[in-house]
Image 1 (cartoon, rainbow, N blue to C red):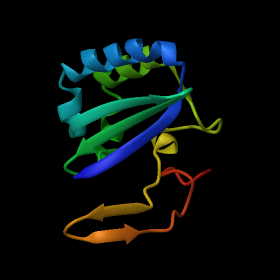
Image 2 (cartoon, one colour):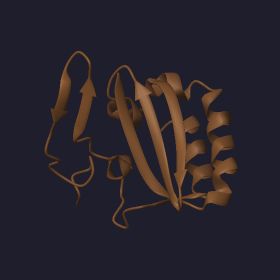
Image 3 (cartoon, rainbow, N blue to C red):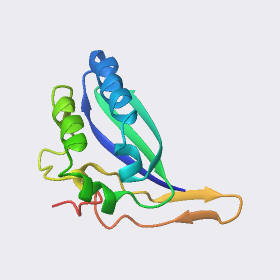
Length: 123
């Protein structure tokens, strides 16, 4: 299972609107196109966390989908509610958190040193 955690800013009062955008989108082919098997959205103060679970890294399929009308619809609708955490945000990877610890019963603890503050390389 691969997980991607997206971090951004959101007014807590907008959580229902954001949820509706994804409810609408998740009823289309977009999750299948990107490879999403599960999505969970979290709010914490003025922060938004978007956990995407998939069988493999979604980044390649996400970048392919960026030119699709379904992706553009979600992206446009979310702009009303979501703003980048990083003021230098330029692309989706700039909002993706870097994992540094994982544990499973099979592999035990795995600690990795983050090479950058986000998967975009921390421009």
